[in-house]
Each structure stands twice: as C-alpha cells, then as structure tokens.
Image 1 (cartoon, rainbow, N blue to C red):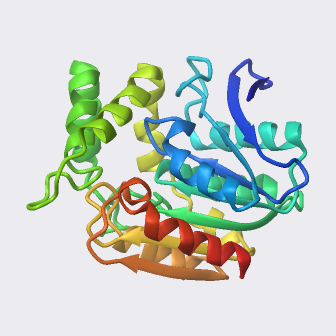
Image 2 (cartoon, rainbow, N blue to C red):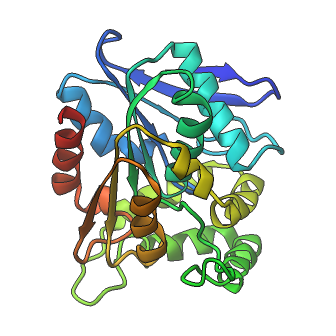
Length: 278
C-alpha cells in the first residue's frame, strides 16, 4: 500500500498486492465507499495469480479530505496518476456504480490512448447518465438526488445506515435476511470519508453525461447488472452501456441487487474471471 500526491495536492491511497509481473486488475469503488469494498474480489483474483490494485477515491476512505475536485474528470485523472506511478500495462479495470463511471472516463481519456488497458468491466455502473432529461426519459428524477443531498446534510450517519440496510443490498426485499456486519462495514467505509466529497459526489455520479466516453472505448467490456438494482436502474444503465460500447458482453442477473458484488460474489467473481481469460 502507499500514497501518491496529485498535481492539485490530493493524497490518494492505494493498495497493490501480488506478483508485480502478473497481469494487473484495477478496482474502482462506488460512492461513498473505499477500496475495502473490493475485499472479496481482490482476495479472489490474488489467489488466481493476478496483481490486484485499488485506490480510495479523493475524499473517500484513507485518501485526503481535499475540498476540491469531486467530479468525474478529477476521479479519472487521479486513477491515471496511480496507474502511471505503478507503470501498469495490459490492465483490466473493474468499476462498480460510481466507480464504473470512473472506469469509463479513465479508459476513454487516459488508459486506452496510452495503451495501458486490455479490458474493462462495468458492474451496476452509472453511465451513460443517471439523471432524467428530455433525451434520457428513463433516468432518475432530479428530486431523488436532491433528497440524497438533503438527507446527507441533515444526518449523514443516519442516511448511510438507511442506504446500507435497505436498497443497496436489497435487504428491504421480502424474505431477504439482513447481514448486520455487511451493513456495518458499508457504514464504516462511508463515515471514514469526507462529507463534502460525498455531497459533491452525488452530482458527479448523477449528472455526468458519459455517452461519449462509452462510444470512445474500443477494448472489450463486460457489462454486469442485476434487474432488481434499486439504486441504479438497469435499463438506462447496463442496457444503454451495451448499446453504446463497440465491444460489449452483457449479463443481467435476475433478482440481484446493486451491491451484488458482496451478496453474490460466488457468482460474479467467476463470471468476471471467465471474461478476463477469454
């Protein structure tokens, strides 16, 4: 593990495990979490012989609580700084939720032009655009995101508890047993980060139009999402990603929630491994 400092002074924390000569897999976490959310994947792919790398987004986890740059452009630039510091090539970039937007912008603007990326995986990812607009009628209404902002500002701890114990993992569905340790771990990761980064991050993940990022990507991309995702509806997300990408493989999992990387890691991990090896 270590830190790099970006040109604008953000200290970005990263983990780097495994054989430095092995093919690297780079993981990009969702909002408002940290690289710890990838434990089940990093240990799995490490055991399969890969080099696994993950960073905490600026203002999240152990990265510095810088007050600026909480937008998709800076997120991607920060990733590039870590990748260049470690001199990663032939990498597979895997992003969940907001991290999927981070992957799309990084690959389109940095990784692919630099020849550093082999493949990408988008899991329950936010592109091309979450916000409902005239040209994106299936998107989510702005009032929902304004509600997120109001709840976070009023009581971030209570808001994060409600998200983790409810829609994120589908624990609010009939017959689904809540895992209190999973909820506690989500809450721990969120509360470690910066309130301002999380507040401004809502705009970043909901209002950033990444249509052109997706169109620019030519490397193979695996698109995964559950059809019971209550956070990022799959129709304006995964289905549109598959349409816009030039080389996409799409899998929709019946009944899986937004946080399926945790709840269904036993299924998702082998599916990703098969794609990487293909």
